[in-house]
Length: 347
Image (cartoon, rainbow, N blue to C red; front, side, top):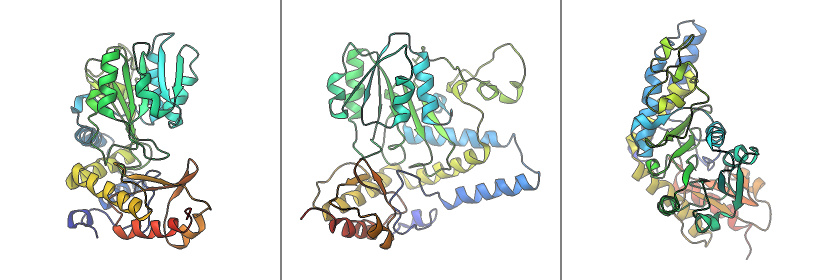
């Protein structure tokens, strides 16, 4: 069952266990998007008014990520932030990555011939993090199977090694307290666990990071975007907004609503709900509990058709079926998904 405060904000989505692909929005986000479309069609859009939505979105993400709002930027997709980080590393920098990671965290480093990139299994990554590493780049939670990296140990090992840190929070922020301020740079796409439209992405930059250059700076990187439209001299925001790019107005307006809905429910409660449902599913499949909202189940036969017939929306990732549980899910979803998958598991 939905709790009352969740039911006030989200419509049920029975059987939808695929937030790790696309999150389900709260009603307020959908209503805002429709209002934007209506205003666009009526030629009544207030362009300057979207600045308030940008500010609300930055504030909402800052609260979910546990950082000051001044350290939050909105550059778009994760690969944009990864590319910026890669481009700002000195030639010959040694970068450590996980081989199972999402390619938006890997490709911008691998494509840069100036960098010396080492790719190791995720389980070996922290042990390889030593003085020979200049930057470690990794996801907090793996997209394919939901494995969580020990973020406390990552921060500790990186500090001991003197290594810079870049962490993708896309599969974590929104259900997991992440403490983004421990890392030099983080990135996050908002259309999954942040229940936002596709096209919005966040970035955090720690105050003491002096090696990152705002190479993508445009009018929205200025201290007052509406006076940064034309000509020199260079003028940039003093806070992390200098790393922002021109916002996708409609999407940002909806994102501000989505983040406020999540904050109203509370991150601790969301974590308990999401991980609790994932563990309910794991137990029904005789799998050990874990601390992730994502479950990947290997089977001896393809369960896709049976899942569809049971009304379960899941996806195939990394040789198994991936389920991901969020606020619109109930115990019935976990039970029905497990019942189908159990029939495809080894006996």
